[in-house]
Length: 322
Ligand code: COA
Image (cartoon, rainbow, N blue to C red; front, side, top):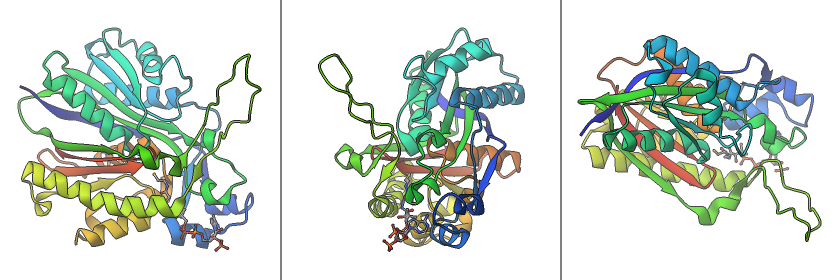
């Protein structure tokens, strides 16, 4: 049976950066409030690029970096809650654009855990033996669901994409993962509701924008991150001392700080770039990995834990030997 190794990671974000001061012109907020509560300084916001276009940029960068030819890809998975369309899937749009004619393609909706869910799915396809190379992308244009008049949510989110090409390998790569969901708490964070519209019902307005119980999500996240990381260390037998980096979903600096304290780990072990991106949901861990790789932080043999949590509610962690 093969393992699933990471060939390369890459990332992309729209050019336009929106600072906290920019948002203070739209709603009653301040840089001081946003930074002290979340760790966010600015976020990238699309001025026209949709999710598939950002995915295609990431895919092209990955193909160039690895030398993999599009037709060598067996599988394309895009993790997103902000697809261009319900159908075709974002993954199919990417498949068509890059000419990956031999790849199966589909989207995964698991919000901020989406990249880990998708890597886990790709890992199972590869371990089953028939699939050798997969392109896995996390990408979001969350600005589509942001109510720019709602200060409780508009300061949190950003747009961007990141991804990996993974391949069948003899050893290393994805060593252990764990995925969770708690649908009974799903209504604590909703976005882009689609009501039934047919000839019998008069259309009611959809709750299009994000609606969130921030405190409940905060408490949920600080509880499940340490739990999920502890499951991974138990499952793999790898001690946290031997893990070089923990790459968490970037939702709030204080959430990461809480989790670090509970795990008795120095905050420096966590890669954090939320100050420049805000919360990019399924893209956030992939963007972080792309940046880390381009900064030379990830060397072959390094052990890295990814940990994600968010809407659904979903959460999960993964240990990778680079
Ligand atoms: N600027 C200024 N004031 C704001 C504000 C903003 N952007 N957003 C909310 N406030 C106000 C509130 O109205 C409230 O005012 P009040 O006391 O007069 O009612 C006050 O600040 C405190 O609000 P509260 O919601 O208690 O703040 P908080 O410390 O819980 O921080 C979050 C709010 C959203 C930053 C925090 O709960 C959080 O990060 N939760 C997790 C959210 C998340 O990560 N979601 C995505 C998961 S993937």
